[in-house]
Image 1 (cartoon, rainbow, N blue to C red):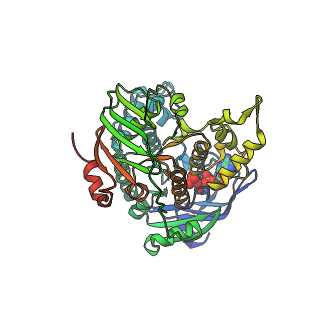
Image 2 (image 1 turned 90 degrees about the vertical axis):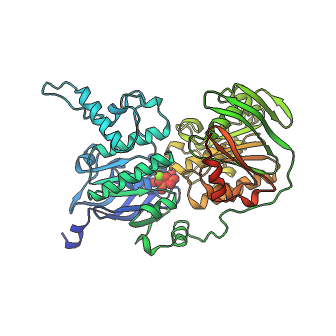
Image 3 (image 1 turned 60 degrees about the vertical axis):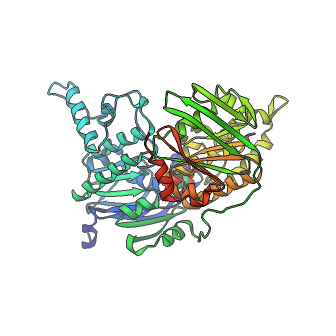
Length: 504
Ligand SMILES: Nc1ncnc2c1ncn2[C@@H]1O[C@H](COP(=O)(O)OP(=O)(O)OP(=O)(O)O)[C@@H](O)[C@H]1O
Ligand SMILES: [Mg+2]
């Protein structure tokens, strides 16, 4: 063995992974030093999750060489890799919904006494300690199915840490976390580094990379592009290497003549989620941005308007007509499209093909003479998939097999295919790479130009400021601020934040 390889914790050489019709990785290199945070970057479908799943023992059919602590190994099962000291926080969560938090953390390795009886108290206590160490108050005896997506993510993190590994892979760990949870995670990462644990960090949030990464590796289209120390790469370098081109206009803007009020809400109250006295409107030809910190009530408000949840009092007008939307079906029939933030539980049927998922929202329009017009369906879906650059060999591919960000794009295709004129986008670019983000902003612009009303709920201030023609800020279930035609020019990170942190 060469001397050099000894100082690495891990070396992966010429890693190739094929799926039917897809060369997901083509001779990719990746290495790790102990105690470093190594960011793995690339567009949706670049192969980030695939290479890490090979390392974690999930993609067993990989080709190439893995050297772990100086010794060649075969990554053949996840249990074996855990025992070697490699653990992974999956991008798509992998917990058992009907078991408790503690049972999930210690699944398959429950502590037992000498008679082989499970020591439930010990297991629960150990789980509690782990959860405390990452600063979360999720109960160890809660069932997974009752948790929010963010809480599930925290359980995944606790589970990965429970192996006391030398290498922890974090695949978009913060995509569902609140700001507070994210801060806690960053503290955990700091502690792990001090213990010389190596961390592979995958994220589309470049601010996080700025904050955390020591080194960066970029993949593009399944190919290795570079590995560099962070300080040697500017933000522009990162983007152009990921995307393979320069992006000069990140938030393309179009001015459209403003039309009628498409959606008007007056004095809406909902005790369940603490929504209080909410009034706002959204006009055709405009993008209305909603900003708020986690828990401000933005998603809850949109759900109530769409008919996913009931509200207690208040009036909703659609195109000037007072309506009483009582179910999602009603919402849809009234022309509202709701693109949810959580594609896994609300947006997609993962076992169905891309094309089937896109058609689901609009099956009526495609059925004539009791037959689905397959040709038309195919053409339309193909067009949408190309427009959004969904990376897939075919629209017949199961959505399960797409990368995380490409699944999000299918959710968007699905709703673009519907007969709607009020589009609510809840965190539309979460998990989406920089290049495709700009595509999504262009789509929002075309919807505007076609005379639709667009509402964008976002937690990212630059996105809010970049896309909105009219802004509402929420705090504690209320509208705490507004920037309209006259005041939009005064909207900036500071002024928006001031409203977002307003106390009631
Ligand atoms: N089980 C599978 N079957 C078929 N194709 C797959 C499978 N898993 C991944 N792929 C394909 O391999 C490629 C790489 O996917 P991967 O999930 O690694 O992307 P990624 O870089 O993690 O993207 P994202 O940022 O969207 O999560 C994609 O084209 C994806 O569709
Ligand atoms: Mg991925």
